[in-house]
Image (cartoon, rainbow, N blue to C red; front, top):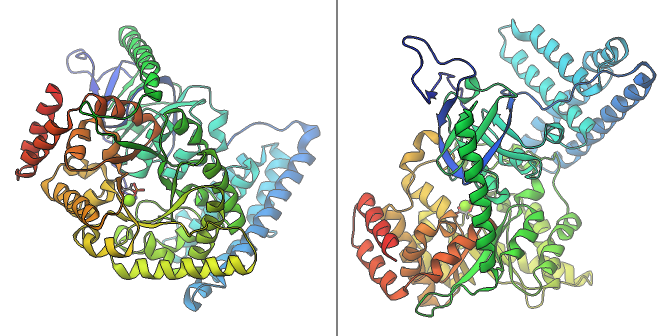
Length: 607
Ligand code: PEP
Ligand code: MG
């Protein structure tokens, strides 16, 4: 979802400017957007220019020039090796795709071999003593500028390739993509036109305080990643890039959905106080860790954690969860150009399974496509006409059986170390489940022949209920699967035909729409009739506003980001389930989402 954005200023001056004059550049300015991750961040802004890479720039002393040239030569050699490896992998694709990608990669190889680009970078290091990353960036810009006046589509595509090659060189030089985040002043606030989930995953919350972007919806994966990392964030802020300069002090109010640039001293003091109050509240909520999630009238609710990134395990464990209800495996595929192999995936999963100490871990097969494009080879192949309705999630896995078999093999092996369940994203037909079960058995036989330890018995195989067809066919799906996990993020998107990652329609995205609620209810009833376990792991699970309704609809297992869990537990412990069930029934009789919201909010205000 890339669009050009008009950078009209949407700033609202905090106080009236002198008559007829625009607010001074360094006056306090307030920008509004979607508060997607609660909390307050205060820090110096780092404005990421659109399309620009985070490239460190520094001069090279005369006696280090040779070493810098060698560093660049190594990065270029490594890039050639990567591209050759990609070519080998591409050869396994269907003929037409293999041919096309083959040509593209050949062109990349040429650009990495004694080309104008390579020679130009070497010259810059030698003559201008630029560091290699900055030299690559400058040379790419020069080449692109040279092509800019040629009105030719073929040339335009070549410029794109040159930029791709340049990005690869910079990644190799910095060893990790966007490692430059770590070179920013501590506590920086990132301001960008758009951040992908993969870029967000690289932000270390100990170093980055929060972020704001022009594009992005509240339920897209960048938002989910922000909540996972506990980074205050505001997305969908019109005019933001034009209104902030790197170095400006900014406040990100992720709760109210505001970004305040150059706050006055009174505003700054107020937000510093608010930030301290929030920290205090978090410390108090942490005390709930050892208390059970039980309603006032004694019904036990299972609370599990969602995991986006492996290092979240610690935070999840600290909340006292009963399991991992959703392990999104996309993190293994992000920020890289190749696909992770069986061993690598196994070694990523094993510590998570072991770390949970006997509590179940629900591992979802790869869910890329749609708004979740990994930059790996797989991601590049999924960019269809309408990605959200295209080769996404289980459809992609079934189209690339070797990739699926590799994932399943890693899961089966990790399942030898503790209880593991396999979850399939975006299932829409019973046939898809049959195909995966066949694959599961085949991989298990192969591993057994090799004498490799695997889960015994085979792990339960469940499906996400996140497209309307799955919810409406939940009865049939319940007969062929071992458990359900309701994904309200996609279920809302696909039911209402509203892109969850698009800030322009974010105001229409509403899980309280009666159509969505009926699908949740229908699914819950189907699981109960078939006596299979059901959990809900979409973002609704982590919002205490919805707890009464979800419990009232019969859901007894919720999975959410670690940061959301204490508040949800607190809400559950204050709930009377009989009253919540009565309110849910009343809500299900309504046809208007606004009325439903009022009924729910009134109930929440009372109990
Ligand atoms: C969902 O769609 O609700 C879900 C949990 O999956 P994801 O957000 O990863 O698409
Ligand atoms: Mg989903």
